Image 1 (tube, rainbow, N blue to C red):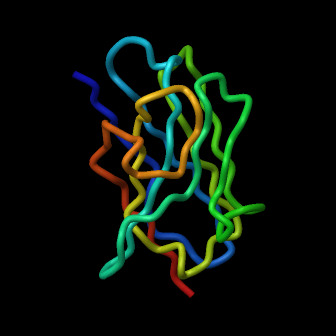
Image 2 (image 1 turned 90 degrees about the horizontal axis):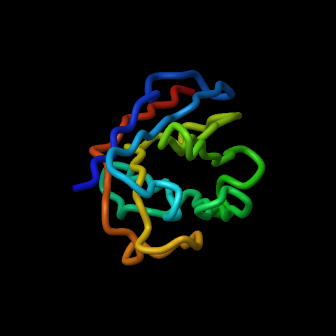
Length: 124
C-alpha cells in the first residue's frame, strides 16, 4: 500500500512563496511519475504540475507556468512543488498523486494514489 503525505501549506500574502513537499511510503517511488493537483472551494480538482520518474521532464498548467516548479528526490521518496509569486486565485487544497506509469501526465485518471492534501491560502 502506498501512502502520500503532503506538507508545507499555509497562509501567505500575495507575492509570497511556499514549498510543498510530498513524501511517499512504499517501494519503487523512482519508477512512477508524480503530480500535483489543486482544488478550490466549489471547483473541480485541476492539474497543476507533473514530473517524470527520472525528474528530467515536467509539465505545467498554463496558469502556473513560470511561477511553480516541480522537482523530486528519488533517494528521499519525495516530490516538491516550489510556488512563487502567489496570487489569491492560487488558494486551494493541494494534492500530490502517484501516476500509474513513469511519464508525466495531466490526466487525473492516470493517477492511482493520492495524498490527503495541504491547504494553501493566499491573502490579497
